[in-house]
Picture: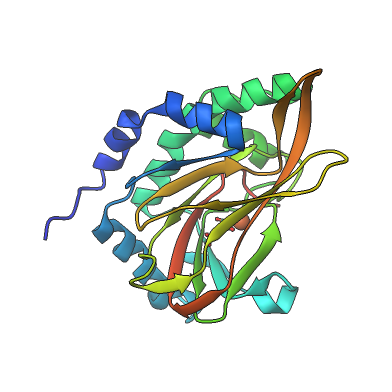
Amino acid sequence: MTTAPVEDITARIAAVDWEAVAADLDQQGWAVIPGLFAGPECDVIARLYAAGGAAGGGETFRSHVIMARHGFGQGEYCYFAYPLPALIQDARTAIYPRLAPIANRWNERMGAEPRFPDSHAEFLDRCHAAGQKRPTPLLLQYGAGDYNCLHQDLYGEHVFPLQVAVLLSQPREDFDGGEFVMTEQRPRMQTRPMVVPLNKGDAVVFAVNSRPHRGTRGDYRVTLRHGVSKLREGRRHTLGIIFHDAT
Ligand SMILES: O=C(O)CCC(=O)C(=O)O
Ligand SMILES: [Fe+2]
């Protein structure tokens, strides 16, 4: 078995068709990047959960959340501590500059104020100066019967409007059910449901809270939420990469 070297993630991110990603994001608020993470990379990250998550010890994670205790659904997750594992740090750093131009275009179209700098380090400086200093990348774990209620990952004043999730388990092999779902709420209209088709190693890029929608009389703002439908069986892990840090 050959494991792709960690350095490769930056090259793989450079090779992604970002124009196609931007077109999908503009059209539907999400885009899939097939096979961004190699199978063995998914396994290495997923195994961190058992190693450092439930045990609560070690330095991999800063906190552990049992979703049912907060009414978030059923399942659990851990937020990574700084320094992030190299693969996750490198992915977060390399993906951000590809998304910043899209985020800026969206904010311009929505008449929203913030513009985002070219590098993730600069954006993190802004978060940290405002007291959003805690890392937000997270590892989620679901078992049979678990689910994740529709939500938005907002952690303070500073919000980067796009985020990424990587499915670390194989549907129909490792688990059944457990689909990544999104809803889009248009003003004064009924809510549109969307199911995002993902295989192990695929990344989904999606809107954190809103996006511009082109209407006949110009752009208007739609609200998005994401979640996970109930797992019928098996075990499912996801890596979440959020670009703003938390208070
Ligand atoms: O487990 C999932 O697919 C959803 C993860 C999630 O909510 C996130 O990455 O923000
Ligand atoms: Fe989320």
